[in-house]
Image 1 (tube, rainbow, N blue to C red):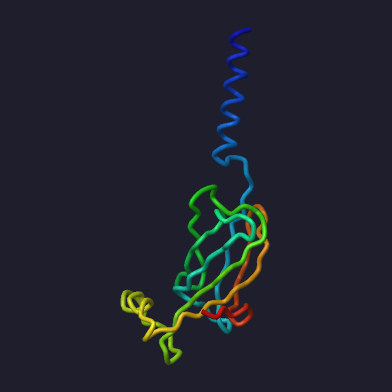
Image 2 (image 1 turned 180 degrees about the horizontal axis):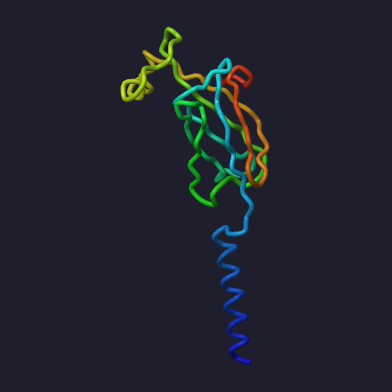
Length: 144
């Protein structure tokens, strides 16, 4: 009888521990592409910010094909809910894209040579896969 009670207590502890670390919680994994006038936007910054949970903010960037990749700190995704998505990209002052590689990366911090453009969207994130593409001509422009 004691063995059964001990096993039951351990089962409650393990279940509580799993719940505490987030196991079993359904998360959403947004995936998609960032485009501008239908063309992929490489090296854009993308941020998903929860409307209700300040800890549910995820950052990422786009690859050469415009597909974004997000970095989840925990739980392998975002809690379901409403999010503001901000996509930022940079151009030279003359409107041309930044050079590739380290040269372009170094220019991002030089406000005299580049312009940061940001666009916002509202999105609902559900549990599981969430395909969300972002066309930069369709969002709300953010003034800075």
